[in-house]
Amino acid sequence: MSTSRVNWSMLLVAIALLVPVAVGVVLVLGGSAPLGWALVGFFGAGAVVLAKQAITGS
Image (cartoon, rainbow, N blue to C red):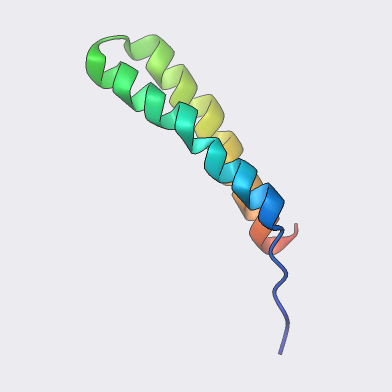
């Protein structure tokens, strides 16, 4: 049985990166699509990579 060690500080940063993603969604819905999609893409990718690193350790 393997023990899972979650890096909580890195996971917290990944969750914090979802704030600009939410702002991007609001901008897309509000009419500023290019800036909104840029925020969603850039910070969304960062959140996914950091969350994966925090949970799996690799």
